[in-house]
Each structure stands twice: as C-alpha cells, then as structure tokens.
Image 1 (tube, rainbow over the protein chains, first blue to last red):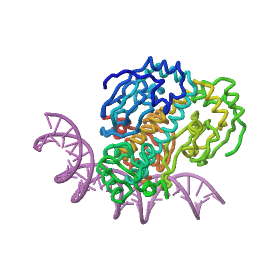
Image 2 (cartoon, chains in turn purple, yellow, green, cyan):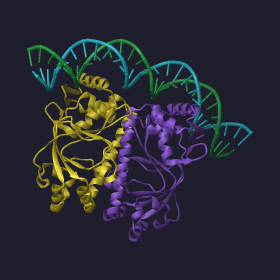
Image 3 (cartoon, helix red, strand yellow):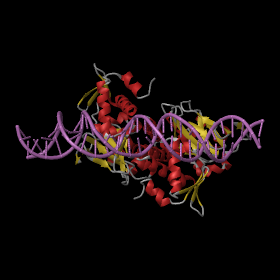
Image 4 (tube, each protein chain N blue to C red):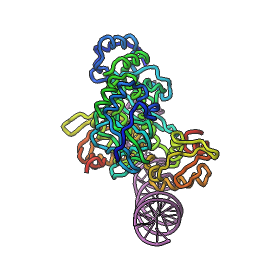
Length: 236
Length: 236
DNA sequence: GTCTAAAACTGATCTAAATCATATTGCCGC
DNA sequence: GCGGCAATATGATTTAGATCAGTTTTAGAC
C-alpha cells in the first residue's frame, strides 16, 4: 500500500462509468480535498469485515473480491468489483461496520473518500441518491439469486452459471469464442458458488472434456455458450 | 381480494414503524389520492415474480412471504414482511419487473400506492431516500448472509439459525421461553433455508427431543436459546 | 358426524459432493 | 540451474441430506 500523487476526480477515467458521473464541479472539488489514493498489490486487503467504516473506496484500476468468512473460517465471495465501482458505501449509509473483507485480485489503484465528504454530497444530490438506490436494488436481486442458486442448483449447474456470469461481466469476443478476462483460481471460483476446490477442478475439466470451454492455466474461453446455458438450467 | 373503504395514511397504525414516518401532510395527501386498499386472504398472491411493477405495497395488517422459483419450480423464500413493511419498491427504483412473488401467509390488508405518486415523493424527499438506502443496505447484508449460510452451514446449523432469526423478529417472551408468533409450515421453513420438508421435520423433532424447543402444531417456543445459538454455530 | 386432502411424521435407500490422500505441475526466489 | 511452495489434478472413501415410500394426524367441506 504505497502512496502516490493523488489524481483529481474531474479527469478520472473511471468517473464516466460510476455513480459520480452526474456530479458537478463543487462536489468533485470536495472529493478531491477529502480523499487519498493508494496502490494495493495483489493479495493485499483494502478493508476488513467488521471494521468501522471510515470512507468509501472508488476503484480506479484493478479488480477486487469481497468476501465474508463462514463459521469455520472458510471464505464466501459475495461480489467482485472493478474500475468505476464503489466499495463500502453501504456501510456508510446504514451506519454499520464493513460487512465483508475487500482484497485486491490484481494490483489496484484505489481512492478513499472521507466518510463525511461522501455523505454530505450524497445528502445534497438527489440524483446520486437515486443512482445509489438503483445500484443497491440490483445488487440485492443478485444476492437473492445467488442464495436461490446455491440452495437449489447442483454444483455443475452453478459452475456453468458462474462461467456465464463471468463471461457477461468480463467476456471478450474472440475467434474461438468468449475469453474471460479475469483469472480466478479454481479455489476462488469454488468460493463464489459454495463448492470445494476439488469439485471446481473436476467440473472445469469436465466442461473442458465436453468442449464447452477451453482452459489454459487460468485463462478460460467459452467455446459453446448454448451448451453452458443448458448446463446451467438457464435455458431448456 | 375484496375492496373495502380506503383508510387514510395520516392515521394508519403502521405508519410510525415504516419508511413513511417522516413524510408530511402534502406528501401523505398525495398518497391518499393515489392508492387503493385491498384485503387478501391467506394463500392469495399480491404480485408475481416477473410482472411489471405498477406500484408499491404497504402492509397494514397480516404477514407475507416473498419467494422466487428455482429451475425445477421449487420455491425459495427470500424474505418475510409484515405491518409497516413496503413491498415492491426496489422494482420501482431500479425500473425492473418484480423480482419475487408475494403471497399472504395470513389474511392481510394492504395498500397499493401508484408508481408515479411514490416515485415523485421519493424524488422530492431526501430523508425518505436515505431511509430507503438504509433499508436496502440492511436487506442486502441479510441476503448475503443467507447465501453464505446456505453455502457453508449444515442443515442443522441453518435450522437453528432460522429459529433464532424468527425469535428475533416475532418472539414474545413467555414463562417457558420465547414463543414465535408466526406459524410457518415445516415446508415453508425448509424453503427459507434450502432444505427439504422431511429434513426440516427431522431437525425440528430432534431439537424438540433435545428440549431446545417446544412444539405444539405450528406453535414453536424456544426453551434453550444458548443451546440453539451453539447449534447455529453463532456462539462457541 | 363422515369424507377428503393436506400436512406431519418415519424409515429405507441412494447419491452428489465433501473429505481424505497423493501425485503432478508450474512458479518464484535464490 | 535447483529447491520449495502453492495450485492443479485425480482417485478412494465417506456422509449429509435428498429421494422414495409409506403411515398417521390434522383441518376443512359437506
């Protein structure tokens, strides 16, 4: 976590894609005055589950996993986040501690905007409040879908579904198919859908054998999307 | 679903406990002009998953379960709601169809406030927008906790956890212990935590045998809360 | 009251996936 | 280069909980 020169929000590349896109000069200026930017190396922790929330994090570069630990200390990944996404705003809004641990999946540049600066802008900007509401609503639906999926689908169905979700978020069209531009470990994939590392490995090599996907190390390419959709019980 | 005389929001008993408590006369007056009230019998559907959202529902009396159907048509209960709670506001905010089906667990009186009336009040009232944000944040945390629980805990642990949650929401202190003032079927309890009806029955009779709970029909009384907390892996 | 249907209960069997145990492979530091 | 460690891979075994099958109890309609 090393300090570097702090960039300004007005020219931040990620601004267009995030919730701050509708903010105006004075509000962005306030953020500039009340933020710090840090670089996090792969594997470093941005904040811990249970800690008091001191600010909202805005990801400029790199991707992050959010997870909470189960009763035996086994991680459950609840969300992935990347450039333009905000982290920790829920805890500020509901005045609770952080509800998950955020860890860098890659080297990241992340700004932290002070609690009060963020809240006062949110309070004064109806448009941003509505954007937050919409974002939260979507995340809630996704979380409920995940719970339903884990409760009702088989490990195989969930793995197929995960690959489809990863393709939707990080897929890049290629000659062979859609290559997934995020290199998770088999264990992390398991932690997203509630299966063990061994089962995740077996399912991936099974899909590979069936030519649904191509796997080279952690680089996964989807070759047969309809087959995966079918395996995920998303299409009949 | 039978019409009856429409009550006015200003004197609604449930108002103090819900998100509308900070609204003022003109806003409540707008709700009065743009709402209908209906009575739903036990088992009747208030709205269906996937349908276009036409308004927000405010529960005056009775309790409701919200569920979505899994790939084999098996229901997963994602939330319970009662007097003072709002239903369907998320879909209005995110401009999506209803994300779940709402069904009356008991006879209910429920008001439906028109889409536009609700949205225009929400847009003009910063305080209510913040209350909504806080509520959504909490629901999101709960949904993520449920997913983690289903992914990582055993059926027994989840059943114990469910009883504790029901006690927190609907428990009434009695001489014997805490009686749960909501009479779910074994099947519904299973649908909340992702287990079959048979497993739910076996676990309840197991807890009963261990004297953790007392069961009379659908009336459950918690006799030994520490033992349940321990069984839920919430306390060591 | 009887009749019927749904809910609750119990036992036997089956199976998906966890767990346990080992290789094998690839990668980073030196 | 080599050594060590983590990730990947694969096989054998176990088990929690689903599924299947049946009985008993309760609740509601008439």
